[in-house]
Structures are given as C-alpha cells and as structure tokens.
Image 1 (tube, rainbow, N blue to C red):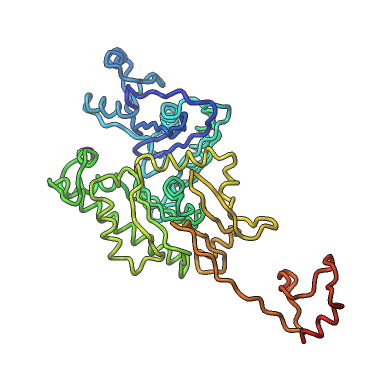
Image 2: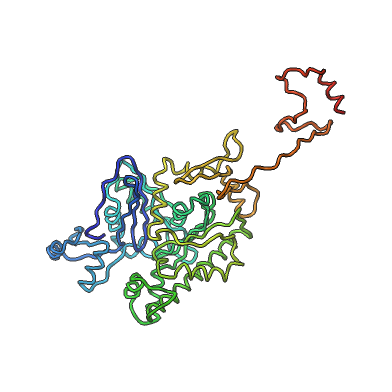
Length: 447
C-alpha cells in the first residue's frame, strides 16, 4: 500500500464490502456516500532486521513488527526490495495461498487489514473472491484456500462469503443482459472462466496460466528475469505493435494464453455437455490486470473469430470490463450489499406462487423481465433441455399482439378448467340467468 493511501470514513448507512484476493493485488470496494471507492494493496512483502527500523521511519515507509522482524508490505515492499537488492516475496502463488511460505496466513491477514480496515458493523458482510478448480494443475487446493481466507476474515470481524471471481465480473458488468455472460478474469496466478445465466453460474473452471506464466515464459525466451519482464509489461506494453525484444516476447506469450483459454472453453464445455444452447447470444467480458496490456482485447477478438464456428455458445459481443482492475471487487460489493446473498442468487429462479411465470426486476438502475424457473430448469435449458428462457431487455417496447377471434370448443369437448370462458359460453354460476331462456335452450340454439 502506498504511504499516501488512506481509508475514507465510511457512511454508517451503507454496509458490505467486496474483496478481490489476487496473487498480485488485493482490491477492496466499498460504497462511501453515493460513490464506490476502491483500495488496492500489492500482494508482496519483504522482511528486514530490526536495526532498519530508523531508516524505515525516516523514509516514512509503513511497516509492522512480527517475530523479531520488520515487515514491509505492498508497493513499498517492491521499492524496499530494490533498495536492498533483494527479491520481494508473495504469500500467494498460482492463485492460492503459497505452500512454501510458512508465514503466508499471517501475512495475508496483515494485508487484508491494510486493505479493508475495520468492519463498520459487527460481522459486516465481506464477499471475497475464490478461484474455480483448475483443469490443468494438480495439487492446487482451492478448497483449503477458500477456508483459510474465510477464517482470516472472521478473525478480522467480518462475515465472509466466498464467490467465484469470474462470476463477480458478471455481476458488475452484465446487468443489462440479466446477469448472463461469459466472464474471463486474466489474473497474475490464474485465468478464471465462468458461464452464467440469470445471475447463476452454469459452468466454471480455472487455468494455471496467467500473468506470471507470461513473465516467466518470456524471460526464458530472451534470457532475462521475470521481474524485468513484469516491469516492462506493467509500464504499458502494446502487444499489437511491440517495440522491443522484451515486448515481442510478451506479445507471443499473450497470444498463446488467449489461444489456450479459448480452446479450453471449447473443450471443457463440450465434455460437460454435448450441446449448450443459450436462449440468446451473450457477451464475453474480459477483465483482470493481465488484460490491461495494450491490444489485449483486440488480439482476443482476432483469435476468437478463428474459433467462432466451434464455440459452444452464441456471442453477442466481446468487451473489456469498464475497469479491469476493480471489476471483480465491484461485483463482490454488489453481492455484499444484498440483505440476503442466498435470496438474491435464487430470486427470479423460483416460481411466483399464483402469479404465473413472469416478474419485473430492477437492479442497479436497470429494469428487466425475468422468467421464473427452478435452478434445475435453468441448467437444463443451458444444455438444450426444456425450460423457460430469460427475457432480455429490448431497446423499445414490442408492438401489441394482433387480436385473435375466440373459437367455441366442440360441444362434447368442454373447455379446460384453467381457460377463461369464451364470449358466448354459458354464464358462470354467479352470473344472472339469461333473459331469453334456460341454459339448455341456449345450447340447443347454438347447435
């Protein structure tokens, strides 16, 4: 965390916080007044001997003391590491808590404290990101990772709720498509993918390749260090027009990662179901710090077009998240501010008692229709089974349907109990008798 970063005092009327727990950065999102503010802490640290205390104070560098050592965290850890010609360390690797860092849990707790501050209320809801299970990494324990994060947040006074990070992108970016879309989060340690319909995850997985994989691969290719490649990448490289040997190596590995992601989506979805049928084309949302390299989304579109015919779902558009660094945290904040997270996830996915199958919903200023179905029906519909489909908002109201003339049912085949009576059917029991004769006389005349 930068020495100039400060937590603003939150307003008491808005509770809930979203926390994106990334291999490279922790990002928290809170609502302060009418604005959403974010706080970022670099997920890195360095430990120094106690005799460096005076130097750190003189330089106004934030630090903490733990077990007879001085700990510097965040961006200042990188600056201090360069000063002492040391490597900054990270308590996470490959998207999960690092098994090789004995102090990883305590360091993560310290970073969470710096990122979140104190809870506003006792047990304030904190929705935090977790990765999906990896398709291509053995020994990556996302279950343990999620449990430890929840334990740390509980000790800090929060009520934790784990949420897949790519699903959080759908919440922050896809309100106008009924929270339906394919979210892809290109992080430092992993790439996370989630296909969601009507705010519910249908399929999700992660890949053990991300920004760190690009750095290490490009570094090996040209004989330099991963730290140098990472620095060049973060300074603003344009992969569509590389201007140096390092930038060219980065461009090659970025394109390879995109190819790998799209191929994995096609293969995994094909293995999950023989056919996936989306009710309407949905957007692909690209997010994450790795996607911020110049030309990344354009390269993704180019690679996607080469695979479009094999893609299992129809795609309406491919776009970047409004803020790729904070999209996950913003989506988590939306969930955290819901009074009941489980109710929100199932709202619009259950029948309305006695009210038919349609309901109006308004969320984040967007009003839309939702078809009420069960969770099982939604999943069946995603893969071609019978279910009601979501009604996406249209730019203009549809024209009224043409009137249909009522047709009398056959005399020996009375109308169904749920059908309204036709215009010339006999009156209901509560209606006054017809003025021109009995019920039997009326039936005789119609014949």
